[in-house]
Amino acid sequence: MLQALIFDVDGTLAETEEAHRAAFNRTFEAHDLGWHWSMEDYRWLLKTTGGKERMRAWQATLPPEARRMSDDEIAALHKEKTATYGAILGAGELALRPGVAALIDAARDAGLRIAVATTTNLPNVAALTRCCWNTEPDAVFDVIAAGDEVKAKKPAPDVFELALDRLGLAPGACVAFEDSLNGVHSARGAGLPVVVTPSVYTDDQDFSAAEMVRPSLEGLSVGTLAALLAA
Image 1 (cartoon, rainbow, N blue to C red):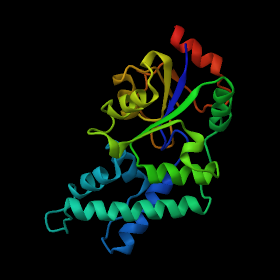
Image 2 (cartoon, rainbow, N blue to C red):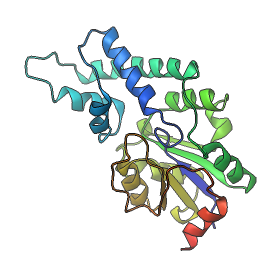
Image 3 (cartoon, rainbow, N blue to C red):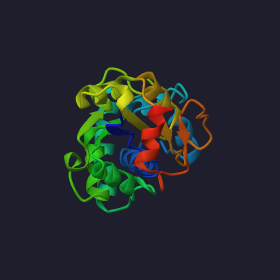
């Protein structure tokens, strides 16, 4: 029996990646790094999960004479980027993807629990709920499992396993929602069926491992999701 829905955040609940990219670029510019991530750059960077990890991946591509940052410097810069991202969302520059709010409301009405399993951190989840729901994360989600709470980020299953542990549920009682191939691998690794709504940065990925692929969650019913578990 379906008992919970577990959502990824970035790209799944909202098309957040452009806000993240803008926050990175503003932070880079403020520190005169000479770094700037185009949409094309960011598409390949998203194959690496985690903001600090993406910064290290980018740095690895730079010529030998380029300035290098330590892990501590990258962590400090990422903390500043997170604050900038929060400011962007605080200005109301983001909306939920079609069907997200309606599905969560319908799930609540059906007595289901709602969780998040995300590579991003809790401040970013809070920035999103304040922007899109005008409330704090715990008013929207029963459980939040964040990337900075687990040893390995997606595509490892750790964050979905943490969400399941906090829900106290088996994988067969839940459905996961993702927008990326790394996310699908993570959810499937935790034994979860996956519904994918590709984002603007992941629409070229192979989602054949998912149980369902849709352009959005618009029109998706709780009954349809329950049927996935019975299939």
